Image (cartoon, rainbow, N blue to C red; front, side, top):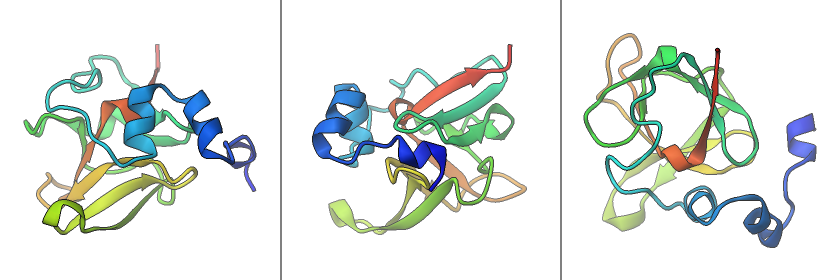
Amino acid sequence: MSEQEEGLPSSDEEWRERLTDEEYKILREQGTEPKFSGEFLDVDEEGEFTCAGCGTELFSTDQQYDAGHGWPSFFDVIEDGNVETKLDTSHGMRRTEVVCGTCGGHLGHVFDDGPDPTGKRYCINSAALDFDGDE
C-alpha cells in the first residue's frame, strides 16, 4: 500500500470531513460542476493537476487544451495507473468514466474526440482537482 493510500479516509464520514461539499458531490457521488464554472478551465501557469481527494498526480498543463466544452480538457494522463476508466451507463447514456487510480474518486469522463497524439479528451471537473504550479 502506498503512502497516499495509507492516509485515505476509510468511511463516508471521514471523506465528508476531508472534502468540501462540492468536492464530495463530485468525487464521491459522481456529480459534475456547471459548464464553464470551474477554476481550472483556463490555467496560465505551468504545473500539474492532482486529485483533490488524495493528491495523486493526474494531468499536466502540457496535456491541457481548450476543447470548448466547458470543463478542463486533457489529451493524456501524467502516468498510466494514476487514472482508471470504467463504464458509466447513468442518465441513459453509455460513457467512459474517469476515476483516480488511488482513491477511486470520480473525475469526469473521457471521449474519443480529442486531438493528436492520443485522440482522447479527458473532460474533468475542476472541483476534483488541485493545482501545483511549477513557479
